[in-house]
Length: 287
Length: 287
Image (cartoon, rainbow over all chains, first blue to last red; front, side, top):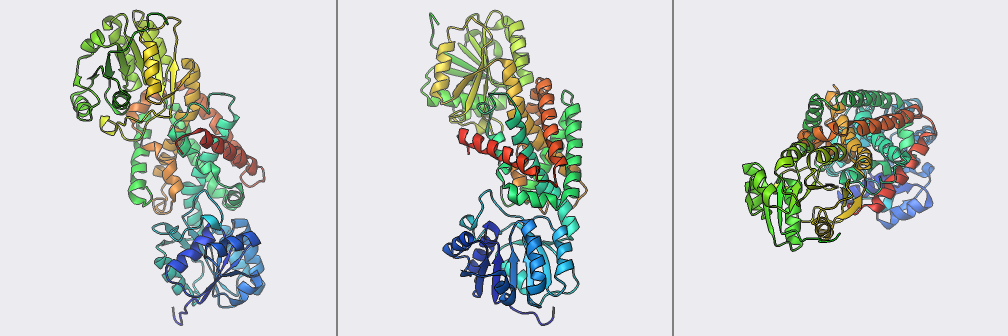
């Protein structure tokens, strides 16, 4: 990259868990420029209270002044923000996002942001709590952070943005939006739907003993079911094809297991699964 | 119960995580009688090393001397032990077990143990680690402990056994073996199979990015997949009908979710699941 430039000002659009954590992480890593926020009044208040942002601004002011616009809203809102930015973003700023499904966002950006530089992103970090109140400077440390470049042309701020991602401890990977979406359909969206469907199956059962006779395994397996519908509806809607394929692959395996329930063949299913689960744990920094 | 008697000697058949923990829990709660173990030489050695049992004995010696026989083996081994005990158990001892599926064990006991008193049990406690090395005196504290009485006639030692369960902190519930099995099919066996099938689905995928792009949710959802096939094969084999019914109910919900992926109806699934998951957490002491 020739004429690389330093990011002097950042605006977080959507000051929640992810946006707030990104701002705190920048500060903890030594970022000295201004960080503003575009969000609802209570979110701005929470973001100021935790020291993530200096003040709230309009999207127009953010678009006119920030070197880096960090869109950390639910996917459906990111799509709307990109539309709005099409006419107001300053020519040279870097726009990135933290949405969990990338293909539709990439399409929208290439349609609307021809004037500005867009680089899709997805930090694989989170927790059940929402809002800036739950933000943590270390949320991204040691976690995968996927970037989905879709243009040959790069923003003058991209090199500096990548340097900040390294300083906040994120483990940056690159892939196309389509590969990202089919990957997270299996590693994130499928587990979410299994947890939701498990909790719903129990909720629908008329067995009155369910809530008395359970162990820690059920608690683990229903944790993701606590997730917010608002976040997930737009993730799943914008990644429907990959999620449907992941569900089909899962139901095929589950049906095969059902058919081997009282046979020695069941052992092979348990062994394959146990080996894969052990492998994941060796790769993960989180368990 | 008239002529109730105190338990003076206990033999643990299967000195592993559950059997070892039960022995440690008895000791911690003040039990002063002898505790012996019937198990493989390494398991006996481990049980002595952690202070759970005093010594190893043959099943014949245990059957001839113990007031309480505590069968803590995999379900298929419990079935075999009950057969062996039919000719050697002393007339008045109490035989109980810790197997995770109760109907087949109850049938086998009523067929083989007409001379002795049998009371099926299932402590809803455990962890991924196996063996007496992982045993803990507090494993049963605050956890459901299901008893499945199937006879009007009760052992003279039953009252004292129940008193010890209370002293070790177990939360005792009673239900029939059939109700137990259809309940744990939903709360324990279904979550186990979902975790196994999820890990297997990912293991079978040819996507090379799966092991790089995942978050803590996948780690939670694949923890149960680490469980031992040896334990689970006999649980699932002896509870096939209830487990199949639970799988069918789950696949029906999952299919319904798949069909609503890009509609507002998805919200109702998330809300039902989230409410149920919150309710479980309020009832649980473990999260």
